[in-house]
Image (tube, rainbow, N blue to C red):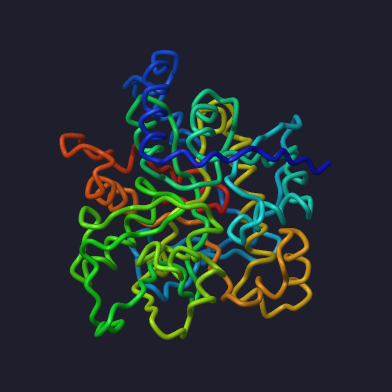
Length: 393
């Protein structure tokens, strides 16, 4: 049965939400069985004691070197329908929190649910709409099993507060031709190649502490600015473009398909977006799937990966029937869905991404310079998707 629960998404500034979340996590960290340094508990959490066996339909093409950051990297893929389901001995209820159900990057989860891929693993999955700051304490306590989001500053602070939360699978990187990212309203005499970003007011839905800090920092540095020398103005999703057009802000982070409204329009320039080939979000697991029921954790990833291999190969928007189906499933206009390039759906996590994200958070002032960055061993676990595709690193 398909079940969805719509949640209320508050517009609390992210810096305050991060602080509130860290306070809540610190207050209850002593109750977490993974807050200490017990080596055996950590090894269990990382799945190091589980055997990895070859998987039918998944060969050498089902894995790529995490250190490969090339924009044209061939994505990991198994054959359609692979990896095959391995039904759990007992049916397991799983709750996945997500910030939205109408964005294209959530499509693999929705398709997996609609096509019965989760059910084939013995999983009864619920997608629950919750913003990340609200979902994280629930994830840490096991009230929510997984989070479809990103390793934002709130996540890093939660892990630093003592909870066993890991980024276990990627989601997507932009397709060729995408201009989702940092846009600026040009001043007199400026061009796309000559824009001074220092002191600009930036309109964004998230504010500080979001993963967009990393790609935004790269774009700003190319134009005489940095994350500490711009002013942030948090706006509702419907207000970002309006503020840019009417001069309320002079730059903005525009997502698909909003950037189409200013593309090739005089007076606007695209300065850069998410790095091609490097996912910045995906599935995050808490203790219930990292340690308490790792079989279910692998099963969930297996269904997700199988969905990507079956329905999201290459340029999936070339299939008109699938675009029609997807638009109906996501409840968005089909013409809007067709107006942007296909996402490059990608379950793998690149090496060093959380290091680069943490550096950007520090540059924004969300984390203190005295706070030591978390090593990747504390933020990422690739072992579960490696087991799902049968790759022994």
